[in-house]
Image 1 (tube, one colour):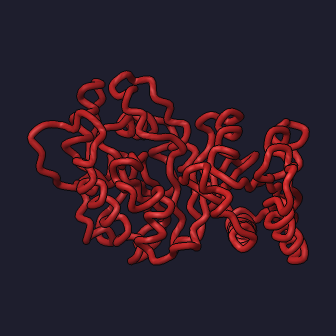
Image 2 (cartoon, helix red, strand yellow; image 1 turned 90 degrees about the vertical axis):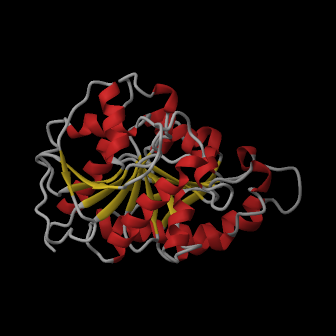
Length: 328
């Protein structure tokens, strides 16, 4: 199948994603985008939300089993309509939407398994309600669904600087128990391979410490016991890895300009400074799956629903990222 489409899972129904998608759809480059785009979601929900904002667009309804035979272009919204019976629209985020989201993901994963699409993008998901404690996030959920558990890597990507946490959505009190030299080594190897194969770049890595200032007044710190040996092992593999660096000063401009990727020990240690620097100009990439998966780097933002003020930057960046992959 030539010029395989990009699949977008609409995600949480009670969110600003319909608005964000519409803004991108109406942008100048969407119709000329070099791959067809297929949205998976409920036509009823999407139309209902768009109507509230006085948005109107035409749909090209697609049979999920006839993608190969369907003529696709981006003049209309190519939609696989996920039928869902409900008496009233979702008026809050709750586990009532879990069945709908699961159906959307199941359809998308079946398409990816059959290699009928180039890549997968998903809209924001409420981790608390959809996963209900079974998975830490979409990264881990998709690794489970594709039988790639413990091989998944979260990379928050920006063309100037990307970050990756060794531990993801876990309580701070459990971070020290869940970092290991093997995890650091394995994740950096996978990120390095991704950069070299997909982006044609040999990345420069900075690794943070765990303790404040990478210092401790106790014997056998995580820096000495876990992080430094992992860095030395990676350096012996001829990877460009330095550290550990104190996280409080690493993101100063003169320091960060020396690196392409910062690998941190826990989620907010690296995501907070990246979002402060680049706002929504970043995307969440899952490395280690049988396909490339990207998510917008923000949540459902349901408090902004219907206000026409949501920023579509992250979704645009996701599509532009795949365009850069095509160029490479």
